Image (tube, rainbow, N blue to C red; front, side):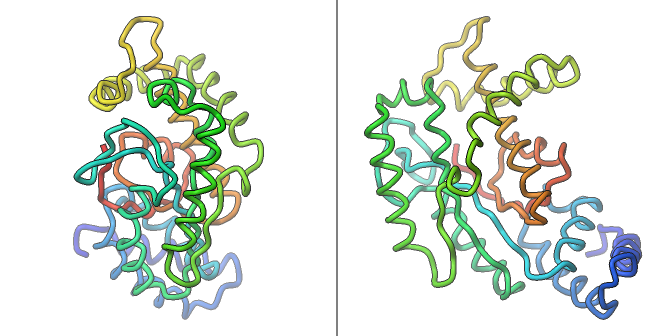
Amino acid sequence: MGKHPWRRVRRGLAQYARQRGIDPVLVGRVLTQLYRLLPLCGYATQSRKAIYRLGCTMLEGPLRVFTPVCPAYSHADGKYTFRGMSDGVPLLFMKHCDFLERVLKVLPDAQITILLADHERALQNLRGVLKVPDDEFERNITGSLAALRAAVPHGWDVRAFTEIFPGFEEMISARAQTLLDDHGTHMQLVLDTGSRAPLYNKIGYPDHPSSIRKWCTAHVAAQYQCFGELMVQRGAVICNHTTTSLRWYASVNAVVLHNQTTVY
């Protein structure tokens, strides 16, 4: 607790409550919940700005937590192997479930939505490596949605990503191109591509100057930015695993509950 500038956070939340006519009693309650919540979370939830944004969101009412999970790609020992895709429960859901249950012990009124990333149908390079054609991908998504609904605790919601956010695939493609064309983000994409090299090697993406890898990195960054913006618009928070791409949520001021788990 001592390492966080709680005094500034407390003042900021009190001012936020005054400006919006929120009962000031709630500020103390939210601070108490934050004290209990932050030890569960990783670095993307720990900065003063991140704590303040999370506290403001909590002041507005029951927290809505959207948790994106990849389709059921193959895995072993808690890491993706990218050797195929099934219609079962995705690995990332299994990684998030315990974390979310601990969050609910602090915030019992929080509303949990699991979002299956069906928009990854647009990742033609990945699907080519996995040898998953369109019809198989759609069958697996349908099967995983059913498996998730059978697996989630009572009261949690399960949706396909594009069911809630129609047009998301097109939004990502346009943003990815914008990021690639922007000199201000070029170096970060280069650095991220280097950081993601072990993942790309595992998947089997070729490494050459025209670079599939750079486009894939831009596509992932675009997913995080666009999803983060949608969550800001909805006043909701994101539950996410550890990844170099978390910085792209921060770039659009999205609120993140960072689950310190890895899948690569």
